Image (cartoon, rainbow, N blue to C red):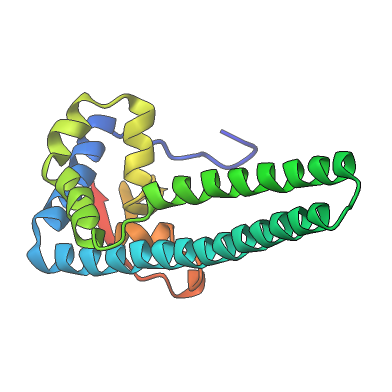
Amino acid sequence: MHGNETCSRWEVNAEELESFIVSHIQKKIDNIAWRKGLKEELLKMVRIADDKSEYKLHEIDTDIKEASLKIENWKKAIDKGLDLENAVSTINEYAFQRERLYYEKNKILTKVNKNNTEKVVERMLSYLDDFNEIFKYGQPEQKKEFLKMFIKSVSMYPTAKQAKIIFYLQPTSGIITENAACVLTEEIIYQN
């Protein structure tokens, strides 16, 4: 009681509410059309990441060529009689820079999914097949993070003894924020 107002109390069985939410998510996961839509979204995301990697690789290749040209120019200058000690020091700096760029390039190449985009997405989707097992044995914090991918919000209404759960239509909706105002959701009501 606060002043003249009495707060209504509603005891909710957390396990029942969780079970209700998990059951709804499982129905989505089992829906073929929903999975197809999710796969398309994931393919777009992976392709965007691959495109960014391709652009970065192009930049690195340009920098490697530039460093190699500088090294060659310094070598030619030595042949024409430039001070050897100063030139060797500069050549070593460019050689080190070039090696660092090769290392960065190789690191990116190991991450690029070129021609494996479909396999990567299929592997991501395969985790959904084990949803119940993963959820059953996960730590509470892991479960919470996993549910956040599906749930936008939960609002409790004690006087009506209801909870309104707003789900993202796709788990990627919480990741892709470019159209945050247009995120598609669905709403379900939990009644105790």
